[in-house]
Image 1: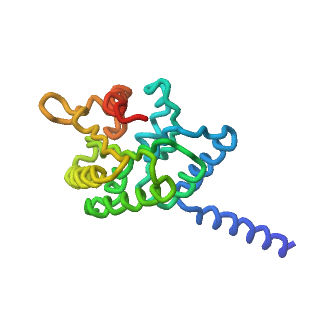
Image 2: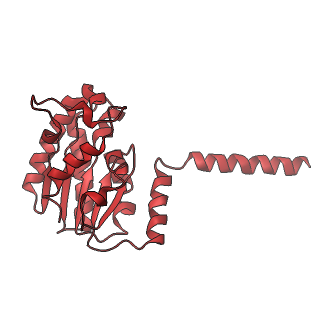
Image 3: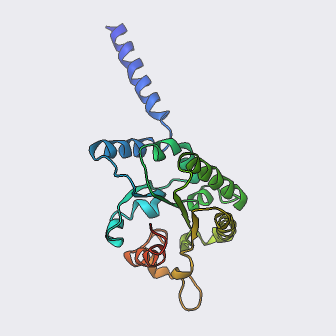
Length: 218
């Protein structure tokens, strides 16, 4: 009896240990795979990759009638996470365009992070995308200046500026600046575009994003 009890305890320990060892966002990526099994992803779509600003945009297709959009944003993700799961996020699809919103959480995760580090992380992701899709359109949406993260705006602005310069040099690539449209007439960030957490956006915030993004959408 004691032997059986010991085996059961060992199995429970192994199970718990294996669960603890799962990399961050493992479950989210597995859910994407499940969605792709249930519905084969269409070719020539617009693939959204990034963090919670995409995750929470569940009705994004309603903002862009006639566009076939695959939303693969997962909340809390950093550019390091997109790089880690790049094969899982790219391999199942044959998009005509990829749009990225990510980088904000990199700074939130490490408030001392230099903008150059985030830019290098983006360069790594961009290289991975280009290795698989040499000629499709790839766009990066500027990091928004969330009121709850005002202490990080300086680094974010530096990263935006550097990534904008990088994308300007690339073929079939654009930097989509959504920061200006989110300001009021005095050039200050409109807090009314954010929900109570002062981080995530209201539908009006997404409407303003749409007004900028639509000219870049394939």
